Image 1 (cartoon, chains in turn red, brown):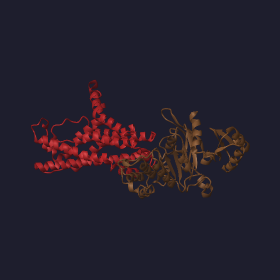
Image 2: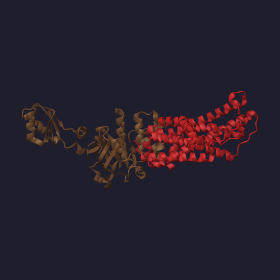
Image 3: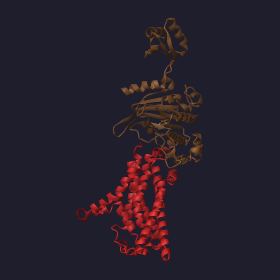
Image 4: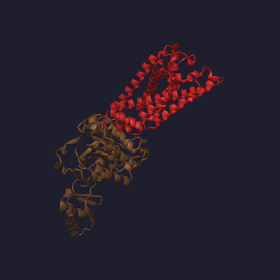
Length: 273
Length: 320
């Protein structure tokens, strides 16, 4: 599997989509920080209610990057996953890859490992940019610098990575299933931005909420709940997440495994035409 | 027979190695029915011997690429057996000995030619040094830094062949390697294939360009409508030697020729005769015909091309 990991890493590290996504992660994080900072400094604005400068300081940066983290997880990870697998069919590289020696499952395992590594890099860029932004805010406001505990940072990184992976695995599976990157991206985005939200809303309203437990099994609901669990009094009063963080980790983990296994099965059994 | 210089011909196979009679590829009763019910390949029996250059001929849609895809494990056979390089199709140990270019080169457009080959070398567990060797072999060293997406069709094909050669494979499978190339590109690709086919390497080329196959192959398999209708040496396929005769008075000329060579050896078609005999008899044919007062307007060795045979084989089958 080392051979496939080397090959996957070699081709993806030069891929514009991956490099651009890292830039986008940094830009979105800075934009979110800038926007919240503006709101905190303009208490008269309607949206600024409950926004505190305290939430922008380094001590809170892990909690603060969870918002852009959720957006990035739901959109960018799906797109990257779909691109990674779907474009292999459009370029005809699937046949090139599968005729070199390593078996189909080995190839797939290497691809998943490298995608996982990219999601780690994306999470680190998110955290690094958040930390740097918080440092700038604190320095500008003359506030003392205090960082969160190392354990909090790593727990946060793990949570964001899991959210990225669950959504990325969905994108990868769509790419394999549809064998077309554009179609996979479209279906993936429509699902996370519309179908899932509608589905949760409809299921939650059925029979006086008797089927809410089904709604709690969706990827987005668990991702939101997990990242929402990273909060503090600096963010003001927040409603308790509907799903416990432990359950969210289990459900998201099950999605990652499920999508990876489903894709492996499709790759193993289907003809490469 | 015109062929690759340096390749092992059937005539000298016995002198080279006993292994050259060994089959490197054997397919028996190979069939592929797609989900729609379409039978693309129907009971193909095929043998490629070690060290030979095998031409896999057939019109578009005959089942060539489907067969090749089955051979390398990209698609599964509905029925039949395959043993390739000593292993079942798609087996990593077998693939390690096979280099292939199936249905056009498939590479990453945002990477350079060299970078693409490095990715393939990683996958095949081949030294990165080999990348420069094959780039040199295909004369692409100076253009290897350009992005693959900017390459011409000919350059893409070259990179495809280079990728197939990275493993220094025992068996090289090239599917329509001259597809989409202009005449110059075709000539360059033929030269490239000539170079790569040298030595003990077995080459399986699929093509519908018959002149190309006639020039380069030891044996051919002809597929039509999914069935292998003929597998033999090019010599056997082209048949016996003969003489082409065009004369003034066809009926009288037929009498003379039949008297000389017998009824079975003289075939009259479209105002001329194909006479199955040694082309050295041309002088005697001319002498007899003119002595009988028959003017001879054309007299030459019968040049029966692979194309003639191909259309005879596939045309009949296609029409049935």
